[in-house]
Length: 399
Image 1 (cartoon, rainbow, N blue to C red):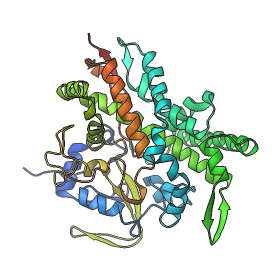
Image 2: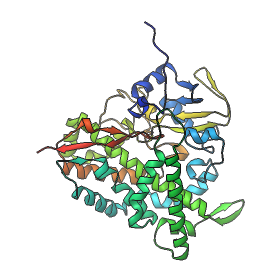
Image 3: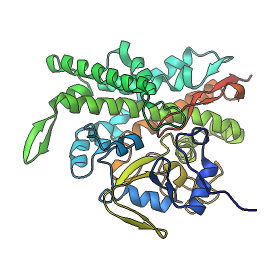
Image 4: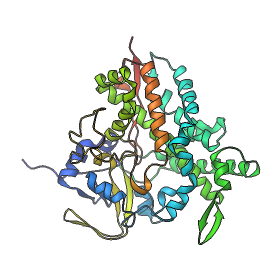
């Protein structure tokens, strides 16, 4: 019997519904994969993805981080995720101090207040973990840090979701997504004007006051740069935890013994968060642009091509993680680098915040629903670029 050639389509139902079987075939049969329909390459083995993430001189972020943007050849917005060194380091340094573990610990009370606010309003008999909880509290935290007025914070989430949504089989951002991005930018622009007139104790005011060295001189950020910063931080700061917590509840429903272990020993929660990031990372891939030819596994990736670095595939690579397709909160974290929050220059700026929020959410969920069942007929995945996760996770808390 002949085996069909592996096909990886990141805009297909197979991808949006967890492409782990496809990833396995790619790692084994086509470690340097080429998709002729969408004209991109993909790397899936852990060693290859990790090495590429550490090599911005070859795999550049300067053309964008999704396939549509890289292939368009259009100028990219001034986002740090779309910069290479040394510019990336200079711009990232402006906000690094806000996201150190010590600084994030000072946000713990804000995080707990929001978690308790939404769980306190939840109905145990009819609880959607995403729509009633994990989609709501993270955006409140990051937008409060930024300085977004309370009445606009959930609007940030709704606009973000719309901007990330994709239609099956299409690379292009739908018109509604383009409009959502414009509305987000205008919202932040208006807040920036208010802060220029009246600074406050928030990140937008700090960015207005900041200076960065460019061409040997210290310069301030302009409105476009600050809007880009705020849009990126507001989006990434909400989306990762929203998806991680939803993924966690589905994963633990399939592994109830480990949920019970967490319930009995809360000191295991940080390790559980790391395993969740490995098991089903919210950000499944990043796109880079080759600045030079790359020779790998007998294949040449020519300069000037988009390459998907598949974090989700790398984290399931049995070459790096023994028994990789088994979820195990007791896994030895020294086996290999977990790529769930990126690696190298572009490792997740808000990693400490994401870990703290996710750990706190799991701790409270263990109290709220020590035993639960998922209403699987109501489970619904998102269809988004780069991202994998759940739109709906309806559960019933058991007595």
